Image (cartoon, rainbow, N blue to C red):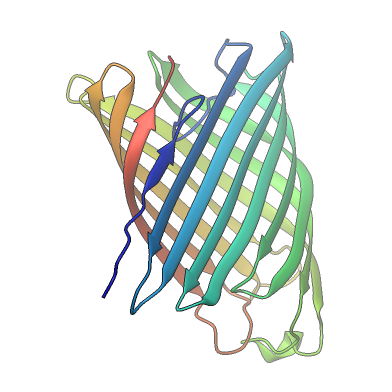
Amino acid sequence: MRTLLFIIICTPFLVCAQIDESDSLKLKADLSLTGFLQEGNVQTVIFRAKSGLSYRPSEKIVFKTQNSYVYQEFGKSKADEDILSLNFLYFDPSRKFYPLILGFVSTNFRRKIDLRTLFGAGVTYQVFSSNGDWLKLSLSSEYERTQFNEFRFNKMVYNGSEDINTFRSTIWVNGRYQLVEKRLIVTHESYFQPSLESSNNYRWQADIGLEMPLWEFLNFKINYLHTFESVVIESQKEEDMFLTFGLTLKSY
């Protein structure tokens, strides 16, 4: 058996868990590329790309975008090909309370989602921010349109509909903390997103990271992602969990 293990970690800018829009820097960016290839009796291909950009065109306006692409193939059969783009426009994020406008675009091969768009607005409360530690709570309301390429669901009320449209409300909790004399960094980014029209249509996500500094600009990172979506294609599971390991390279 011939097995080729190929791992790529490419960081032309910086890799970080979260970009804080309240930071005074005019421009912050990150990009990470990772891959895994195995050939022989079993063929496995995994490719992941993630980028983030925060730009402050004026003193009181900040635009932030986070984009990711995932492709996975097992035994020459495609398992995942997902695109996710999260875009925010913040107004005067240095204040305790500040408004935001958001727009999300995503696709999900495994969940049979051709296109999902979500647009809305909300407000963020900055609980505290000091020396790189911060905690923020946000509340927003959005209109979502999801186009599926199948029409049989785990909840029969949606059967026959390839498009599911609804108004949602979202509660966000984001934070970053430096512990043990900054030798351990904890980050979390979570949300709960119920439909305002149907009680059986909701989703949530918890994204938790642990980082341990290796050098001044390099950290070792462990990340746990847990997602739940109540309305899925028939026979699919509602939950997904991912545990990943990697490096964080930062320029500040």
